[in-house]
Image 1: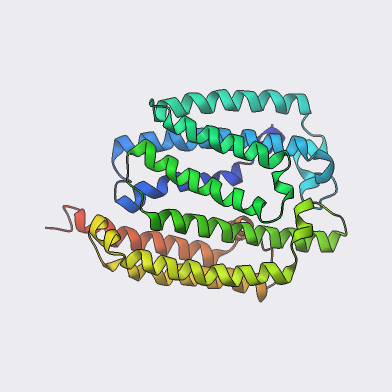
Image 2: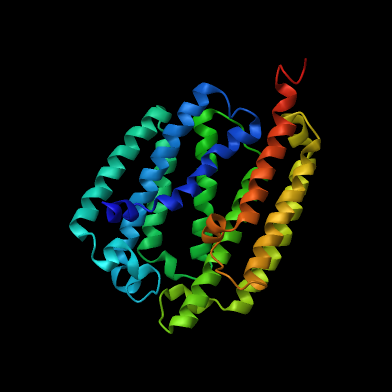
Length: 298
């Protein structure tokens, strides 16, 4: 059973938490009705994402067997039969569609899931072999998650929020490609065609460039007149320290400690970054939510 669970890649479901971002930033995350809708939407996105992971693994069985890490995946290792994976994929799409209808009966959410699915199927069937485009597709997937979260909860999203999401996701994709380059160099096997369009010098430059852009964009977001008006506070700039600290730590892990460049792996194992994220959430919560609390106003 553990191999079938591994086939779904539950660790990567953390990416779907971006669906909660619009409500969190709007100060509506604790409205009971919206929490139920968001949980249904989150589950729907997880179903669609896992179906795409299965399609991608099915397509990449031979290439994954050459990869020092991906060779242990259920399909590449032979622990799960391809025919079983296809059935699970179909069931996930049916379940995800039902959950999407529960979250949003107007079908706009299902439409976004459809766009996400088609885009990623195209990615699995060849678009991932085109350097730069492969990272842009991954980043746009996060934007779709944010837009989906806004649609099902009827929350307005600012241009700054969409831009920040795209930049952060692109930053993560660059880190992942850097990790792929390192693994390719250490194994001596070509594991992804798009890697021919990258090298460490280019990706290191992009990491530094986008680090600066993300920090400046976030600070501009916290001090934007529209953000201050909609959120009812000008104090969000206090949270910038945690954004800066998190990015600095990631760059330290990559360039000083020379650890894995995969942002997802670092997120799950680096305590500094985990604590920084928790402090950012706590600070944002205190600034945005506590002034609205009856206890705070007594």
